[in-house]
Length: 306
Image (cartoon, rainbow, N blue to C red):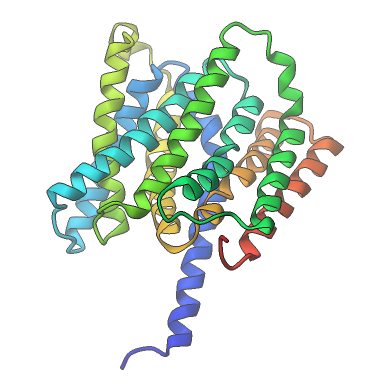
């Protein structure tokens, strides 16, 4: 006997809520993990190895669960999405964190929701954002600005301007990849879909790392235990759990709602800094966090994206 429609709907809502919770908490911690990992591992090679391992694990799990091999079209579209999300998006974050303070990084990456809504609007048959969605986006971004404001004191450091420009590029690429993934050919299994993106994206990550001379800077014997542990965390939680949750969220909700993780992640980062690095939480931090969560609530409670 099939379960009642109401029970099925409740189960779907619970699954979506868990996926959002994973994005909000896990991806909020990855900035710190990336910072630790790239201390002794070049960023693009680190990311390439990370997504190769995570993609292979997800591929094997999906196959064991009966998912068929992806078609040629699914591999092709997955390569486009994987390159945009992982190489141009996530890979750039790793590279930029060598130069840009974490507060500024969080602020610039938080522009993803704006780009997602604008790209979704600009594409053929795209949806125009409603006034409510627009208010939510701008409110959330304002909150992130308040939260990251102390980081602007480090702008004079060499390479920060280039790093910031690359983060804006990476944010636009991530938004474009997220939008494209909703329209592209992809396996039915979210795990297989994620695996395809990771395995193809890791190829371009390695290629960029090689072109940038990272092989010559790689000192395997000099890799610290802290970097290894951070890399392992990024593989298991940041990649396998986090990206699978993101792929599911993109399937089940609107781009504006899917992108709200970018508002909550800086809050998680601040809390982790307070808990593990003795960083103070000021009144500005509390105000910024409240504004961010208000923006998330406005977007999440809106049933449709225009």
